[in-house]
Length: 74
Image (cartoon, rainbow, N blue to C red; front, top):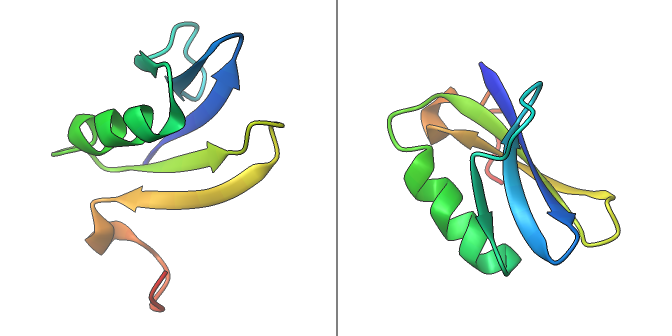
């Protein structure tokens, strides 16, 4: 399963696959990037780790949802 990171860099937010040198997508706001991320992850299997503006971890989303290893909601 591929791992992606959503982080803030300079004046924008970016989605970057772990180990990649370039971002897969960028957007001026986190909300816009999360919408792009959901579209981008259609048909893919992966884990998206979302970070706050200060770089600390906020949450993780698994795509598709059925691939989530946890049996609890959330």
